[in-house]
Length: 196
Image (spheres, rainbow, N blue to C red):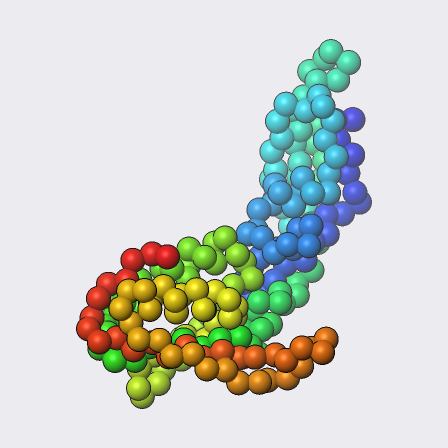
């Protein structure tokens, strides 16, 4: 045989964001990568394809065995287990480690630039997330990682914004204080903020 297969392909999939858990990491849904994590292909395999069917996946393998060309087809049960990933659980539960408050004279272009900074960072770090919260004084961003929030605040300070930092104790873990940071960012004039 050109490959060794489990009886079924099992994997965890977040029912909210659609990410799947592979090797203890949450990654984008990719059927081929899911299969590669559970199927052992021989060195004789030249290529393989998949065809999804109801509750199963057909794997078509092309290769060579004992010097002769060979084609194999295998139909395997496809069993995603729907759960909620840590990020979605935290997001829906209102979790955040830092708040960035935007105050003063700024317009949508500033926020668009900040959103771009966050989206680029999220592509590199799947654990990072943020959400916007309206305020009568401006706009607040609630951020899952206080280190990244601090990095953004320092960047804005370097661009001329006034930044004030404060914190609130929200508990203790392993004998250490858990702090929720607040970065109040005040703009004196509107300016487009480039990427971090």
